[in-house]
Amino acid sequence: MTTAGLESAVALELSRMGLAPLEPGRGFVCVDASALEGARIVLAIRSASRVILELASGLPAHADGLLGALCGLPWEDTLPMRTPWAVRAIGKSAELRHTGFAERLVKDGIRDRFRARGRECPPVDPAEPRVIVDLRIDKKGVAVGIDLGGGSLHERGTHRKIQAPIREHVAAGLAWLAGVRPDQPLVDPFCGSGTLIAEAAAVALAIPAGRKAERTTLPRLALFRKLPLGELAADLQAKKAGPHAPFLAFDSQESALRSARMSLSRMGLAAEIEVRCQGIDRFHADGLDGPGLIISNPPWGIRLDKSEAREAWRTMGTVARTLGGWRLALLSGNPAVTQGLGLKATRRFPVLVGGIDARLLTYAIHERRRETPKS
Ligand SMILES: C[S@@+](CC[C@H](N)C(=O)[O-])C[C@H]1O[C@@H](n2cnc3c(N)ncnc32)[C@H](O)[C@@H]1O
Image (cartoon, rainbow, N blue to C red):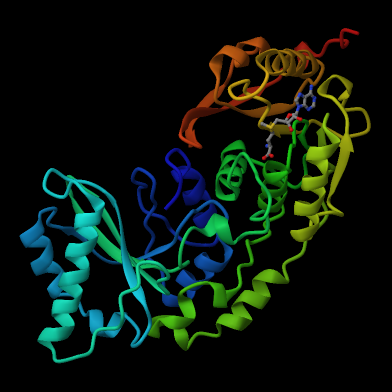
């Protein structure tokens, strides 16, 4: 599962893991994987918000049919004994309009299945479940599965103590869409708390998320329990950055950079990214060795000062015209300020960011556009 708009990013990341993702749906990508491959996805993937082991799909999207279908699934082999569990539903259909109702229905269906077989059902605990039964409802049908990450993956990452405007999996997804590379300079001139440049660097350097197996649901499930999960997680965590072109993060606010430095050092990326307190107006590419990529989330001027945001985009446009051969990938949630850039986007990727219908806008700066910066 991922944020709507980032499905192709997830597909690219799964492909780099050697898997063959199927055609994405809205907010999700399916892949056929062995248990070991599934465990690797849970521990390594950056651009997904959740990883679900699908047990059944296309189930009837109405109460009676769903109940019957659920009673046919082998829950006693799936849910671990004495482990608290709960159902979490998203979406709706004409007959299943309330997620709370759907969750109760599924919970009752699963309990009935245990009862009918004379087996004790593990305890239900909606407040602190250790296994989550995931239910996705839409008008075409219902899919049911187990949430292998045990909740939102972005809450398990290295930025969790820091207030970041974009979530880690969104930042990673944007990096995949932007096409980050280790051999080209990578710059975030409005880095704020550093989420975007950190994830972009990690994606460029093929560094997996490296989650701890014990923080996921994997060790609780029979299908994964026999796998060498500790070894697999340790291998993924041991992956270090290889050689790369200069990576640079800057921001005009020293206070933002303090958070950025903390995030980068937690992620083991402090040595890979140079962090500087400087305004966009002072950026030039001298000494950066070759055209690179600017990936950034400049201010949108929605909650904060509009004039500062307008000025930031306008100056970004002026600077970009001096960067012949470079590419830009800029996230905008406010077309009114984006106009100030004065460049025509080559692609626009719609992405939902914090409930705002944002766009990742990409630009290619032609060599002939190279101009002397205006002072
Ligand atoms: C939307 S935030 C960036 C969020 C960032 N991607 C993150 O995940 O934390 C925009 C940042 O631009 C910075 N900023 C605003 N005007 C600037 C300018 N002229 N030059 C450099 N940074 C600027 C602000 O200090 C703020 O941290």
